[in-house]
Image 1 (spheres, rainbow, N blue to C red):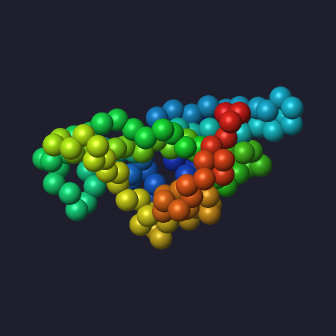
Image 2: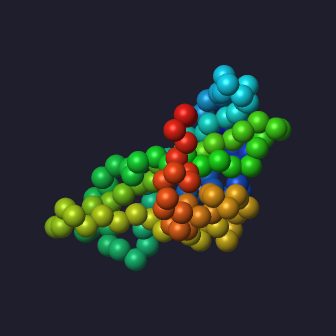
Image 3: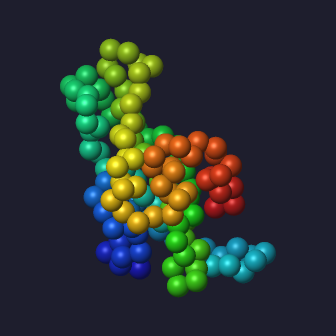
Length: 131
């Protein structure tokens, strides 16, 4: 499955801010449920409200896996890696992009909406151990 085809199954507008890194199909042996796992990585777009000359890109936050709407009866999980920037003069000051505005623009599950809004902080609610 090509990236352009996969984009048809994602919320409209989400690929303006995230790139598809890769994807895979899976099957749970115990339940025989099949599904897709799409890995998204945040584009290197500096957050608004800060001076880019004061910060440097420092990789990504740990990936979070969220269940999205099923595709043709198959499970769909999104593994999302968000970027972080560190202040050059204060190594403890880290910022991330505020993606809460996306929830107003695109149709998505409540879990994905909570994650992008920053309200879903309980890891057991999102992270799937067996993926």
